[in-house]
Image (tube, rainbow, N blue to C red; front, side, top):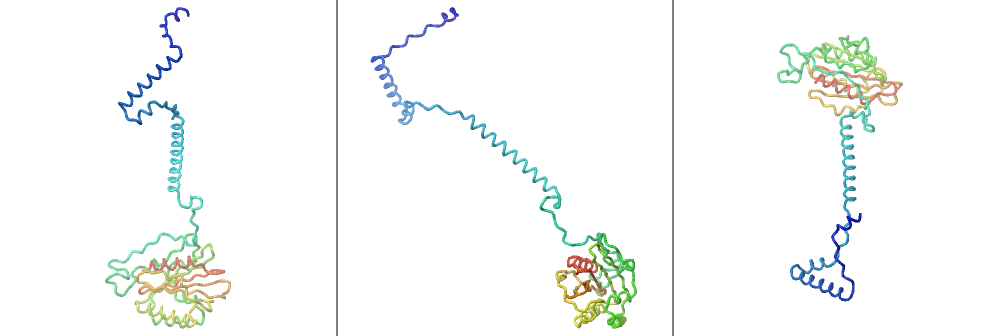
Amino acid sequence: MTEQIQDRPESPALPQEGPATEAVATEAVASEAVASEAVVPEAVASEAVVPEKAKKSRRPLLWGILRWTAAVLVCGGVGAGTALGITALERTEVPGLGTEPDGRWEYPRLSLPALPEDALRPFTDGNDGEIHHADLRKLLLPAPNGATVDPELKGGWVPLDSYLALLTEKDRGKVKEHLADSTLRHVAARGWTTPDGTTTRIDLLRFSSVAFSEAFRDEAMFKISQSGGMPFGVESARVDMSVKDIRVPGTSVYAYAEQEPYGPEQTRWAYVQAGDTVAVVTQTRKGGTLTVPFQQTVALQAQLLG
């Protein structure tokens, strides 16, 4: 230890403090200040003589910024992942966004039947008589999924009396006579009952010409306006406006609903006149018929005929 200390160079002796020392120091500072003023602007010179405050370390601030940036990136990533997850889900799988059923029935995929060779659709150029050349049975709306089909109304040909049985007994004779004069050609029918208790029947009546189908439609409208020609058990009816927005080119739709007070069941029915064919859609349900499935059934049947 002694040798190491001796090897160090001797430190210069510090001047002793006293009046002479203070005077020399003062003169040296003054001369430096004068020299500085001669070279740099006044503001810079004043900064040179004022001692600077010790600068604070910026390391804590930088760490804080980095931590917040990382937090924002993590939250953004989680948010983006959540958004992508929601868009990938079906609407009914997102809590709070499930679409409530609106009462519509689920029907099989519909398609128009094939036509005989060189035959035209009823409302195309060249088919001035608006004739349905397709098999009438194939133009019947199929039963919706889950429905029980009436074994006597499976979508085939039915006798005229089967349709007439829908009407009040006092009207059957007059309607039968009118249809005989109209040269009615065929009647096809299908019926079913859905789990909600609605019984549906669709009858397609094909006439020999569009003039006779229009006459049958007009006669039915007239009889109803005179409180006649209504379905069996219906004593009074009102116009049903639920079908007013059904607009299928080439078709006309008229609907009625049994007025209150009615018995244990309510009946709605509609006439869809399309060219040489008239569809009669009838629905009955205990406690009251439902608007949505009635409107849906009428609209789909009109599309098959249009």
